[in-house]
Length: 139
Image 1: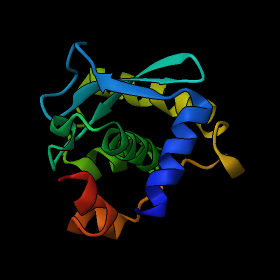
Image 2: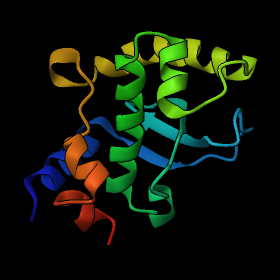
Image 3: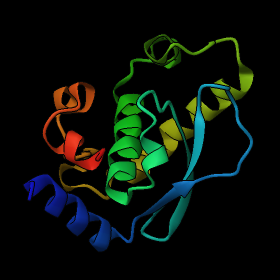
């Protein structure tokens, strides 16, 4: 068993985290709406699911995908950098509104993590190369 799995399971249980595919309006054809509940607060997070991980319906994998997307937003310098990083059309006003809203939301979510920093418990290298825990979660 990977220690990351235990860490994710413990964190999800402690914070009451649930994640499922949303049926909300798409703000961009490349982004999938996902509903996130953490500490009884509900959020909609739009995910660029380039590896189609949400199709596995695996709560642990969903956790990694959603919180990785939130970390990417949090680490982005600004809206244009984020759009370029994800290959999104920056001229989309709905996307800009989402980005502004989610940046404010990320600060609330960060407070749920030790050191106030979003952690998805998996290395980017494992995520991108489908190695280790990611390979296990995608089975």
